[in-house]
Length: 449
Image (cartoon, rainbow, N blue to C red; front, top):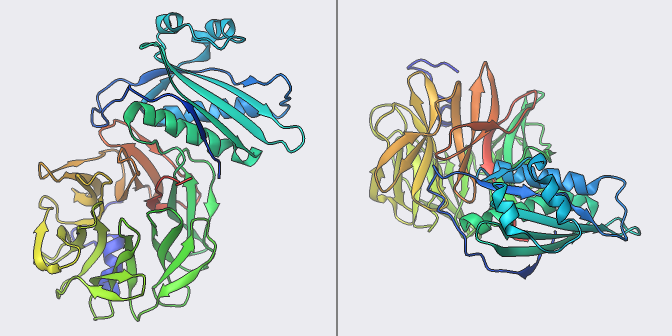
């Protein structure tokens, strides 16, 4: 998307115009971890053996093969593991097929660092399955962890996602994101509705059917709810649904804009932009619907995002006097009546700030030349680097809950899709492939159970 100096991108232009699967741990305490920030480290070579079917079970539907493929793909997408082609280790796999032991030296000689062995069974009466996973470290010659999962066939994909996240946690110390979902907007008959998709691009679900325009979806910290702005009743109202699109109810219907919601880390408050004062200002909405005003400026203030400790809020404002939006940080209780710090200086347009889960970085949209790019501001060094310089314009960053990835909208040739890129990584991955495109990603937290 090319722009000129007078063009104002989507998010800020709107404001200006409107003024159960349960794992059972078996054993093991991980001693092997890597540091997430060491982005140049090589991926760990891992062998995912064929799932072994219990003797009293039958699997005509190929559940075991499907499960293995899902698990291997999850580990690949984590970008900390390199799944080894089975051709490399199939002979060693055959040798251990009927044994519970692991020949660490043989696996290490094949260049395999970690090994996953899985046994599964299918109940012929109800078709439920049970998977027992075991993870081994061939280099350090130790058993790392075992997990047992039981569920219905409908939970096969989620089961594989969950164990993949456990494997990532063994290596990095942080749970992976295979089980997370990304909410986003997609056009439909001139409207915009909210959808979700899994981290691996499967499991597409349509959540809203407002037959209107939805904007700015935001997940609650527990992942149970999504708040967003809806024009279904001809005013940009704040609406809440649960994580699967049920229980829709308006929660704020003040005249004018009720937009850009952001949940506090403890889930007790929502920061948002309201235009009830004839200007876009940032407020905090509490559970009792009490409103506290945080900004008092004649320029536009919008797009709040909380720091992980809940003490600060980063936001967008054109209060700089240059006629262009910039990124600022303020106290979450005192607002701009206390110190306000500007953190963007090298671009004439900055918007959509998103605080990282670790609190050390802020991602935001920035105009670079005639394109938009995602920049990542380091709070410690006070420097911002571009996440990606790939073709098209990039907008609306959303952090993964482990802080390793950023999802964003990438527009090229008039069409926007959601892409994912690891911070410090080299390549991005396209997540959505809808005919009408996708934008405004919001990343769910990890499921609590």
